[in-house]
Image (cartoon, rainbow, N blue to C red; front, side, top):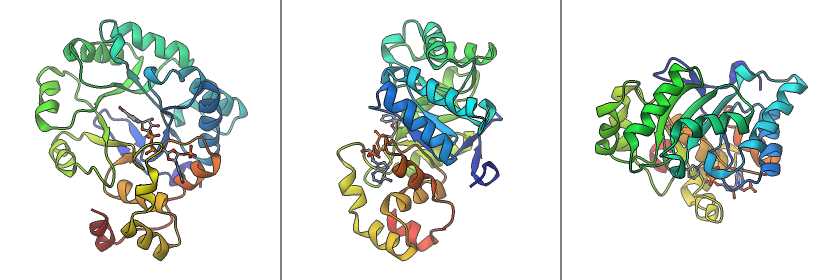
Length: 264
Ligand SMILES: NC(=O)c1ccc[n+]([C@@H]2O[C@H](COP(=O)([O-])OP(=O)(O)OC[C@H]3O[C@@H](n4cnc5c(N)ncnc54)[C@H](OP(=O)(O)O)[C@@H]3O)[C@@H](O)[C@H]2O)c1
């Protein structure tokens, strides 16, 4: 699959974001480097990390290796990181630390990792990061209600482009997606498979298994296709190049509205 065929979503920041990417939570620097390289090699262009994961150095290495080999450019890659809670008192420096460890001069999307004690100041630092050209889009993570989002909007001068939240078969929060659509905010799903150690319940879900069989696809692919078709961005985590390739191979089939509804 070439770049032209990877579906993107248009963010309210004016930048586009690929709808499927690689999550890197729990990966060591070495694992992150290998997984990021494998993801880029297979055609994925969205990479999710966080300062808290401690693997930005590895993520950066994987990105540079791919760019140096010449099959992708920096401009084609969408890198997300997050301000970690222990940096909430020094958010601007946290952004610089991420850029340094990633070895990048800008990050495509920087998020507040979770609500904290001084969201306004942290968000202000994100906005300054945009003005300084260090960040392209900004957003928040783990804000689950309209009220929590509205609190950010009460002081935001730049609209959040993305909310990254837990979102999967057993925790669907369609109401929030519908609510924030008025602002052009995209919801990105973390734990699309329920997280490491909990994937069995998701892959073994009978409805998903039946639909997977009907399409000649795996349960993982049906879950991701369902999320993407429903307007979400999904970032399945993986350290296995075969799984990464499988997770990217979801654009040659379409779920019917009846199948979408059954999964819902
Ligand atoms: N903002 C937040 O607070 C937050 C919180 C949690 C996670 N996240 C982000 O969301 C990403 C996704 O969450 P996650 O990685 O924790 O959990 P996940 O994506 O729900 O599940 C990851 C698990 O699925 C397995 N897997 C992946 N693809 C597979 C496939 N095709 N077939 C079978 N197994 C497969 C992985 O094993 P293998 O390694 O063997 O493939 C791993 O055990 C994270 O990596 C992180 O970037 C954000």
